Length: 65
Image 1 (tube, helix red, strand yellow):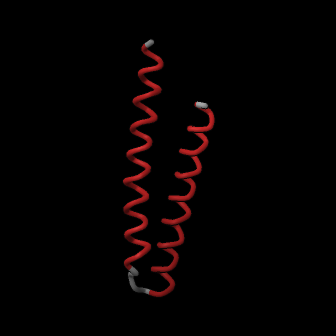
Image 2 (tube, one colour):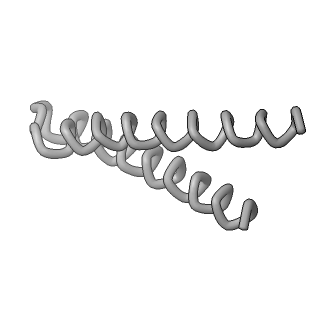
């Protein structure tokens, strides 16, 4: 079960990196900002931060036991 959770977190980080990379590429190509990918990037960062904090808190509690 822990392996699946860690795998899901790794997949979300990879998707966040891909989203950020494609957003930066689009900005360089079109030379203007678009709002929807910017909001998606912001929510993806918040989503990952929340789940990573939960994961690391759970792993640190498991180590203390």
